[in-house]
Every structure is written in structure tokens, then in C-alpha cells.
Length: 294
Length: 265
Image 1 (cartoon, one colour):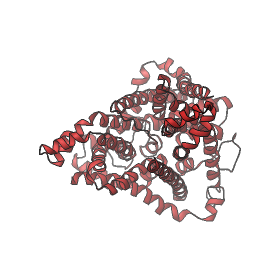
Image 2 (spheres, one colour; image 1 turned 90 degrees about the horizontal axis):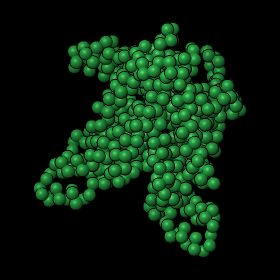
Image 3 (cartoon, chains in turn red, green; image 1 turned 135 degrees about the horizontal axis):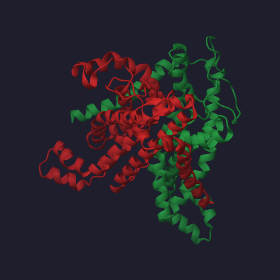
Image 4 (cartoon, chains in turn red, yellow; image 1 turned 90 degrees about the vertical axis):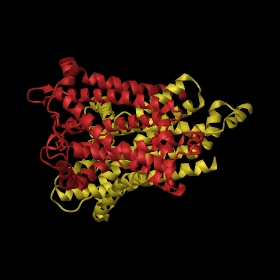
């Protein structure tokens, strides 16, 4: 009976991949590799290219990581070593609860609460710093790449913090005591001994967060503006692979558009699988597997 | 030092912000009618989200009924086996947990909607179940592994069959851990909207038939939240508060149960 369950599980996994590839096959067959490099998404001329969405996914993820890595690492260090024990537990639980909040509620909050702040405060300030040119050019409308990156950063923080905290705490206490005995300050010990020792695991935490950011759908679909073109500025509306599927799938006007959207899903699946396998191997190599409920 | 404390504060602000705003904007929307009526047509005042509440319960109930027995069986197998296959399944479950939920939605669309030729609650439940399975497998595997090995060996030495060891020893001993696993998986499934977008698709009407398109709370939040009309946004906030409460209660209950288990072990 247990064997049967295992067989069903593996059938589910393989079935998922096979079903997607089968549904997307006509699009891949027609466009070939040009599907990945095409920049047009136009049902009128039936030309579909995935590049704007691939770039959008990479850009939002990059913005999210620039925000989440320093904050996440700082929080993890605090929760592992710096704060009083009682506070660690409470704040640790609070950060983990961030992971329980559904994506669609982050989207609602992002769209109706943070987007106006973004338009009136965040974007004008960044625009001023960059002189309203280059990455900060164009109209400041609130929604777009930057807002998606900020909300994504919030959403990946729990993953980043929980795993980095675990790998930081797994650093042998002899290492820490040794450093302190040699006269290192607490800061030197953390920065020169603890963090380097845990670097593989931290890299795993970052990689896992990248995987989550790649696939995050609802919140991004609500705040990125869903524009199928290459973004020129942080303030531009854009689209990610996940967001364009959520946005266009039920509105696809012809079969070819549907198949092309499913082809994007195949690319997204491949990217997520690669990143996740890499992350699991990195985290596992530290010798502590993290059972993620998030 | 100070820098790290600032980081903790920055990490916590969004939690306060998202929960705080959902309460402040959602609570005024709540009324008896809000929970006991289906939506009214556009422009007519009144109406509520009864169809979404019932829809979520039906869809998540079906998803739980399908995924829990399957995933717990896999978890039991993986926890008791030291073979390479078990390690492989564990790894596969980890990787499967990383599959984007929108991709799972397309899978459910391809397998069920395409076969039935129409949208349905059962297709949505299938998608949610696929999301829940890997979470349940890993968590139940962990719960079963906390059972001391000598308990099972003692039962085996007394002549018990493996099936009765599972039923009489492993499952009761791991019960509290399994309970946590189920609560957290249901909490996760209940918040998912991407797998429902093109399966259950949502509905303005009250229905309890799993073969029909059905509303669900996450879908209602999304579909109303992206509209430009304040009346519809209010519905999104009110629904958001209910969903958030439901999920936070499940998560906190799950964590408390596992913390109690940890103290006993």
C-alpha cells in the first residue's frame, strides 16, 4: 500500500512535467529557440517571445535580493547570537509568521497601501538620487518593477532568515570560543569566523529565496503592471513569467497564445527546478536539512 | 550591532504593516450580512462572501481529503526506509515544494479542465492538493522519525505485523507531529490563489457542486482587489481579514502543537 502511494507520487511529478511539455509542444515546435529570445508578445501578428518576461523575472528577483540579503543576514545574526534569548524566540516566530501570510494579501497590501507610498515617496526619492535618468527615468506611477522587487523582498525574508539562522547556529562553538579567546571582539568573531564558516549554507538560503522569487505569482501580478515589454527603468511597469501567465491565461484570444503561455510555464518550471536542486544541495552539504513548511 | 537591530526592525515592519492594514481596512467591512449572503449584482448594496467561504471550505476540504492519506503514506514509507529510494523521494518532495504554484495551476488545467472541458471546483482542489502533498510528505516524515526506533523493534519482537506496528505504534506516537503537519499544510493550501485562477475560476453565485466553477476566498480577494472601485476593494479587504485570521490561527496552532511536542521529547 505504501509502495502504491510512492508510485502515485512519482507519477504526479513526472505527469506534471510531461503534461506541461505536451501542452506547450506546438509553441516550441513553431518558434524553436527564437521563443526564448523574442521580444514581441502580440496576438494580432501571432508572434510570441518570452524574453521580456524572463528579463522581468530576473530583474524583480535581483531587486528583491539586493534588499533581502543584507536585511535577512542581519536579522539571522541577531536571532542566532545577538538578541536576548527570550526575544529571539518571539521575534523568530514573528518572522516565520510572515511566511504564513498568503501571497494575494501581500498583493492587496502592495497595490492599495504601498503603491501610493511608492508613487509619492519612494520613487521620487530614488529618482532624485539618480537625477531622474538611467535606471530612475520615466514617470513615477507607483506600480512597476521597483514595487514588485520590494514586495518580493518582504516575501522571501522568512525563507532567508529561517535557513541562515539555522546554518549560523550550526557553527561549532569551539570556533567562536577560539576566536574570542584570541582577543577578537564580538563583531570580528561574527564577521570573520561565524559568517565565513556558514557561507555555503547562507548561499543555499539565498538560492532558495531566488527560487521562491522566481515563482511568486499573485502578489507580483497585482503590482507589476503587467506590460509585455522590456522595462527601461525601475519605475516602468513590466511583467514576470509567472505574472503574465496569471494575467493572460484566461484571456488568451487564440490557441497559439495559450500554448505560448504554457511554454513560458515550462521555462519557469525548468528555472525553478535548477535553482531549487542547487539550493537543496547547498543546504544539505551543511549537514542540516531544513524542513520548510513555507 | 546597531545595524543588526535595525535589520530586525526592517524585517518586522512589513508584518505589522500587512496585518495592521488588513485589520484596519477589513474589520469595518464585517457584518452579519457579509458572512451570510452571496454577492449582489454590481451597484446593488448589501451582499457578502458566503459563496467564497463555502467554496474555500469545499475546495480545501477536497484537497485535504485527497492529499493527507497519500502524503502520510509516503511519509511513513520514507521515514521507515533507509534505502536510496527513500532519500530520492525526500529530495523529490523538497524540489516539488519549490515548483511555482502557477505552474501547478496549469498542470491542473491540462489534466482536469481540458479533460472535462469546463472549469470546476474539483480541478481547483486537485491543484491545491498538489501544493499540499510535498509539504505533508516532508513534515510527516519528520514526525514519524521522532518515534524512537526501539518502540517499533519491541513491537516487532512481540510478533506484531508491520501494518499493525504502523497503526498501533507509529501513528499514535507521531500523532501530535502529524497534526502539526496537517494544520500547516491546510494553512498553506487555503491561501493559494494561483492554482485556482484557471481551474475553479471563481463564481458570483452560491454553489456546492464540485463539478461547477466555484468562488474561493483568495480568488475573491484577487478579483475584487484589482478593481478600481472602492466598494469592490472593501470586499477584498473584508475577505482578506477573514482568510488571514483563518491562516494565522492554523499556523499558530500548528506551531504551538509542535513546540509542546518538542518539549516532551
